[in-house]
Image (cartoon, rainbow, N blue to C red):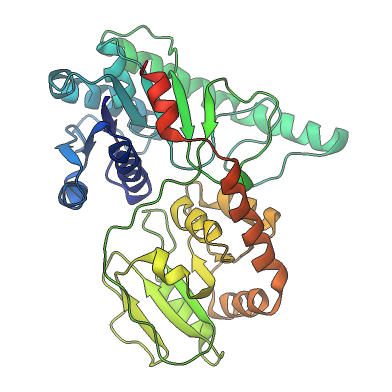
Length: 383
């Protein structure tokens, strides 16, 4: 099958799209990745056909302070800008990242089936859950259900406004206002990070994390035999600032080694028990006793899939939601606000209590329950 995979340039969305393309390539398909310029050459080096995703740059008329407008109006623009190239490649199926909804709109314009890729748990509202982003567990008993109902009522206006914005954006490019949704959804997370709901959408499949390493480099480890703490500052704009430096301060005096994994410039000065730079995280995780990270889904899922517990320092966006889910699962401690003392105490507690590692291993066992995303794409595309 010839499959177009559309995803924005944020690593949390581009990397799962690249991972899916590699899975499709291995199955004999012909994926073509549409994404931002930063990842075109690395994806091409991995053997993937690539195209620059047009329409990503903000326009003068865009209101980036309005999340709904940013997602839906720009999605319509992206759909229009990329329609000629998508049409020319004659795809059998389009896979569109959940935040790059223009791929799905373009598929509708071309009368093609399309699959939505959620590189995190399912974030659609539910009649039985508190609003996504609250970080709350589903309410128990009458009081809990009433609480969730009140919270859903408080967010209902924003949900309706989002539906209205999406309808207007769709109509602006010649689509009906009512969104029929994708042919299928790929929820690329661990079952341990999902939440049971009675209204799970049809054709929505948990396929496990889609993970890709942007480098083949191996980050050298500090000398010694002390437990290794892997620190990975968030790649998201909503992540906590100066995480690496604060964590180093908090771990000073503990009998640990530290490896700071970063896509960006590492701290200029490091103690002799720490190292920093770009290196394969999957390889680092084979040595790590605990991870300190920002709560983004990519690192959290990668750590738990390797059976490594996490100290989570969530920023904004969905990091609060994910951090609380990991805490409830038992594999993580949450630190907010980030201070040297708080993160040092959390690392000490995780290293000293084997229950955290046991919960992370249990989360990894859930990989045996996930579905095959390639098979789902084939069914959606009529193969």
